[in-house]
Length: 297
Image 1 (tube, rainbow, N blue to C red):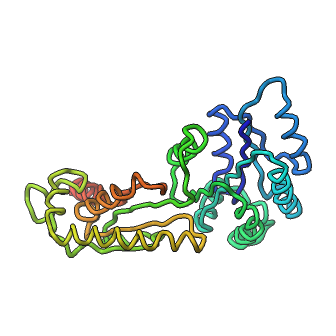
Image 2: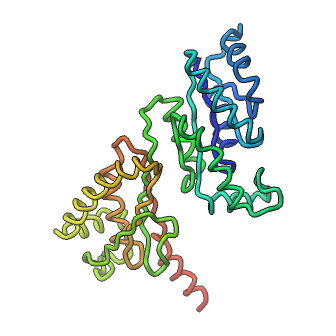
Image 3: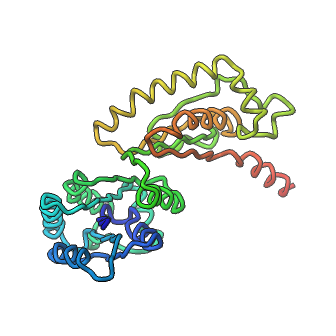
């Protein structure tokens, strides 16, 4: 029987994961009292219904002592030979605050106080549980469909999982540097397709623009150096406990050069052990702005 414990930060997506696992055929139980956990496992293993996959949700609502007890109970169960997998979900404090405001709910530890302080308190309380986790997923920049794909890869497709996620993000400097970027690269030194009439209306997703930019020796060398830097940085970030990295690549408008290099570096990492995705934040903004100007006239 496959038994998965789903836990982590409130607002990081635990309820969404439980729904995804239920759709994947898991028997799901949410927020079971920790004291009943050993009995529950024994009952499901001995069930005549032949339950093959179980997911149990645990969170802060059980209280501080319950979390400590859960950590100890899981250690003991693993020591007794039970096959348990712990999935830990986390997200940045600003994103969790935003999610709670959107749903108009209160963080379980806030009790009328500041939400960001409550989130940081919870992060400390969950540190022991996080250390026991088999899988750590940072949902800060994830959409639901991306989270579902990640969960399905782990628990349905049984793909190898690495607790590190890369997001490659193109942007335009004239629209501002992404606030969640860990590393920012400026590619405005590369040849600009904007000044080539046949390429101006295209983007870095079009082959003609991609080839134009990557035919530059500077672009090829930059890509190689960026890959070398990330190969060095990622293991060191992982050693320090970091679970995700947002690499932002910017040009003037976020449409040509940054999109091209984002696509190119994504190709270098998409088939590695790391989770990996790419986004083009500003690729359509110039076009939309031009439409708005024409409508105003």
